[in-house]
Length: 506
Ligand code: AHR
Image (cartoon, rainbow, N blue to C red):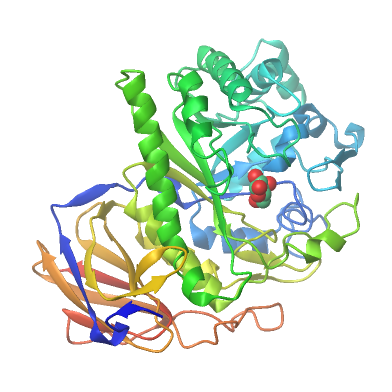
């Protein structure tokens, strides 16, 4: 491996309080729940479970979600949404149809539907982000759904909601105009021209209903798509004036068991974001528009462990075991790096959804009728969500690197920094990518006189393949490190994720 300096040679981390990336939108710590596998049935909803309330909501799961302080949850898909009839999921439960979901070849019993989700999402302390079916359906169904959800009374669809026992409107502010409409796997896949037009017209009617609604147009399903970034250019050329965000989706994989490449995934994420920003700004220039387009990274995570085994799952059942990736310690390090990438682009990425939340490529797992536990990836998200709100600062590194065939020069250190809203607490999120060396980091700060290290939390010292399970739910978990006397330098253990929090005047 070609490298310029070893991790052990150390890194310098430069930070100036005046040099901001931008405000971190709380919605950067959003997540996602799809009618897929056991996310809903056996995940958040399990009537009869020891912790379930009268609505069937599992409170052990709600407790773990509360820990993550997720402010926004995307629902109900995902690929599922592209053939979903939302009307099936409302009204008396005994009259709701069982449907075959073609996206995941499962049975959807519609026991848990739109109104149940709205009640649940508020119980989880989050706002809804609702995806609209633009696969098999179109403008009229979107209009009806928005009216059903948000109009107070005295119209056909709002009165139907009221007749379903929901007197108050749900107040949904954020809508996704379809899902991954470029994907050949998508029910109702569209060309960029077809999608750009329907996105424009659907956005138009939603904004006629409520001009303060916020709308997300589908970007590419990932940077691997052959049509990326022409898709973004073409779609936005149609709907730029009516939408507020363009979506990004990306999942990291380590199928080849190549840790050096895997840990460099956040550099790939940086480049993906920067390419989408460049494309948005190109369309803005073409249109002579004054509006800036923002990014909604509404699916991101690690996903590869179950890609093959899922193919053997029996079809057409309710709550199948699908996408139940069991995450390792190295996956948690990658998730830590991906969070850094999002924070480094907080000026343009305003929404991000960890995909997903429970059982399906998720930080939280459950056993049906049994316990719920935290996967390894829960931890970097937990600390970033709790301490990464405020203003992202521009982190500059002087650091050695290794050469990677896919991504080029990869610094040993991956980092982000966020100053709290009150300006008195600074959180640094640091990953040492080196397997063998500790990485000494010198802090070179400007404008942080009087700040002292108050807290240091580390995820380190585990086998790269270590996991949590129902039997050993806390095998991989972070530990508090004694705060050193020296506030200007710390040493990161090999293969580690660390949060250092400095506080003024302690
Ligand atoms: O999150 C799992 C799936 O990944 C979603 O349904 C789809 O949008 C993406 O391909």
